[in-house]
Image (tube, rainbow, N blue to C red; front, side):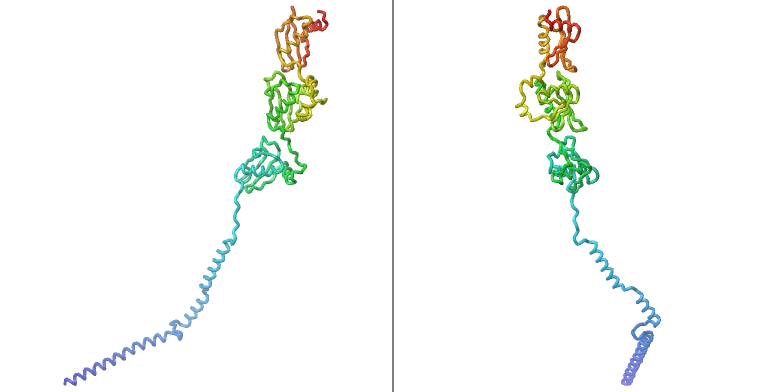
Length: 368
């Protein structure tokens, strides 16, 4: 009984296992059939229409990989083309101040003429551009020039263009006439005139002359100061040291001076070398141009000498120098009369009123 029961249980277990295995195989096999049924031969679960649509959509899409590659390549080319292989450096300006611009022109001018850098006046024209011209004290008129920040210089007016051609021709062009540099200031002009006037007027103090520049022609006008006892006229002194009288009084003075210089002309010539003048001038010539009467005392003595033959006791009550008329006015007392006389620089005594005329006639006749 026991053995049979055991066999029965064994058989039941075996049957159960077989049934279970069969059911398991049935379930797995069914799913595989369904999967196989919905799949294509290439393992896709899509239908033919879906596959065709998908295939068409894939072909319409751009080649992303290729485009990306091209984009990277183009970007790389753009970056490489924007960076210059051999960049050209920007030159630094050589002129940044007025003084530097002045020295550019000064260096050019000194190739042909001696000027000082202070003779160049500079003003700013535009940004990075300067205009240079002669200063008021410049001995030469070299025109107006333009200078940029890189040191390029070019003439800015006709005088500048003439000078530019003059310099380019190695200073041989006839377009430019260099100005003389003998007289450059007031002191020079006064010294030139004084050196001429003092030959006939050795008593003339140089401090009695004053000068101003003629802005029109660049020469100097020299005249006598109000402190001088005499008026020597108004004169023009050129930069080449030649002198010219400008008024009637200067003409008179020059006539006396021309005796010394041996010239009959009414206008002075350019004075010759002072050393040669000293060698040729003699004392008789000096006595002819130099004034005989220079002081009040000398004028009084001249009147005493003129009247002494008939009026030895004549007294003088007044002596006045007339700087405008250039003679002394002397009032004398002869006995009961009073006379007025004029005494010139050359010693001439002239009666100035009727009493003096009567006295003069007696003195000249000797019938006292």
